[in-house]
Amino acid sequence: MRIRLVLGAAVASAALVLSAGVARAITNGTADGNAHPAVGALVADQAYSDGTWTYCSGSLISPTVFLTAAHCGEGGSGRVRVTFSTAYHDGDTVYSGTFHADPAYTGNNGDPHDMAVVVLDKAVKGITPVQLPEAGSLSGLKGGTPITGVGYGAYAVPNGPGGHQYLYNDVRMQATGTLDSVNQTWLRIAEKTSQGTGGGCYGDSGGPNFLAGTNIEAATTITGDALCKSTNTAYRLDTASARDFLGQYVALP
Image (cartoon, rainbow, N blue to C red; front, top):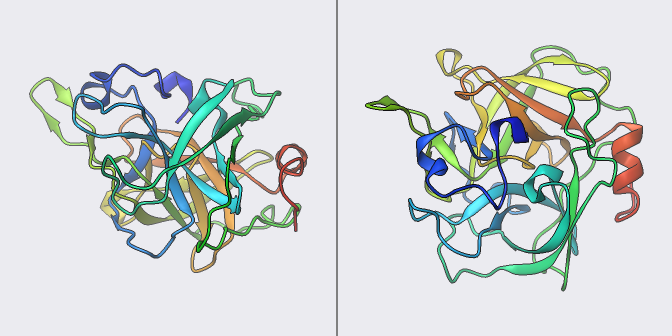
């Protein structure tokens, strides 16, 4: 989720459970298990106040390259850790690497270039990377197309004393929504619990949205409605601007 719904390594730990002040994750979903092993998370250096560790999601797009969102590193660069654990606990295997945000990242609503990669110090073995879409291949997607979002983070947003809370357990989750609309930059995906669909919420920023039933990552979760009950807005990976950035790190279809 974009910085306007604030997320990143520097987020205050109290905000994780008390406000809409963290990254997006999966609601109205189910535990992913080993269905999407190439989906991982960025791991904080210390636990937040609720005992959780992950703060953004992403996907392995080559054995040494992990795709996520630029706002997960506040648009800069630096050293980070990545896990592919289905349910992260401190001490699980992590992969260290260097975070590189798209230098064109702005965070505005037009084309924010909200993309980043982590170049890992060593190759990840035993996990098949996700597939990236071909150039322009998403422009013709029809409304109602099923889209599966995968990520770590808030699995529920109950309303109680003091307002809404965002609940986390560092479990990789998945949920399928339906495509509402496509424009030059975004896929807008319906995630309405009343209709049995789900998708992105806080903790899932940078996480993949797959064409359902495939290993093709169409877009990365960036933003959406504050209570994660309506729309997941995901950044298309088939556009010229996305491909210009990604092509510096991986071979594109």
